[in-house]
Length: 192
Image 1 (spheres, one colour):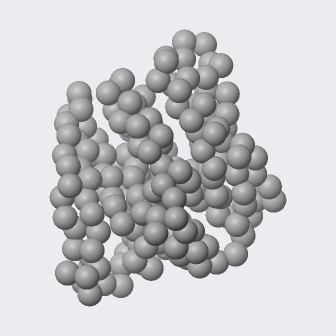
Image 2 (cartoon, one colour):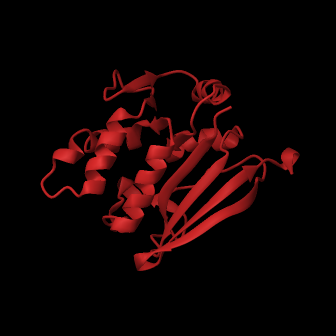
């Protein structure tokens, strides 16, 4: 059975984007944080994206290695991103490219099916898609990368849940600029 990892950058008050989907609060990641995200991308065998995050990622990373001044890590991330199989969940997109397939139906059913397969871990991105997976109890691990900024509202990292979830701390790490990463394993109340 595959593990499902949900990880994103978020503000100290728990948002992945400010109003209007503004992610400018995070600024460009420093080299250590970027390497952390690259290592996570390389460790996963399948990426699951909601429409908004897909549009953000696919607007840059297909040619990110060809951008002027691209660092070796950015070049490697772009190549890894292109090579990693991706599933995009959307009811409004007509097609996707870059080693991706589109799912327009029941996201929870498809994620459940993918989890039942053998293979490397999967990572999920996009608050709406991840929220559906969280409510269904499908997320095995949370990677919370908290930036020292408060924005007061926007798109929350954590979805409203029907039941509580126990988390076990696996690892913490501090990056320059006061950015803190914490990895947690998820356990549903019936698994506690």
